[in-house]
Length: 129
Image 1 (cartoon, rainbow, N blue to C red):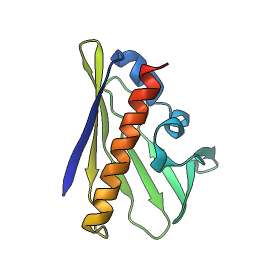
Image 2: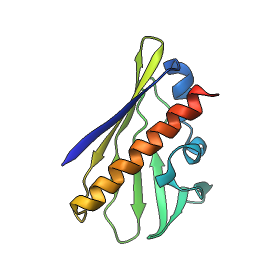
Image 3: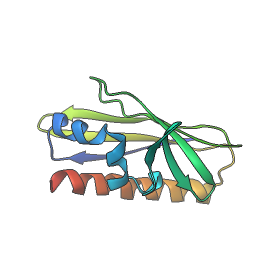
């Protein structure tokens, strides 16, 4: 099961992507990334309730791809497809939430609700900058 979550941000694509593609900025809007995200010996690392997570981000690119992968020891890697798309003078942000194998309906709904909050925060951060 997947769900596409999205928002439209009233900021030109170039400015939105310039901010959002930088991993160090994820902590300003992505609560799931945690306030502990930092660059360590193994790359980007975040402390989570389930232990340390290694986060791999897609390199800067010309296509608006902000995909990232989260790996916690002993658990399957989580792939998070995330895109920014230019729409006139605005930017559409789309995240594909993929239900994980061990996730029940309630957990999937909690994840979706958290991501919707994160996208709203990203919208606020960018539109008020």
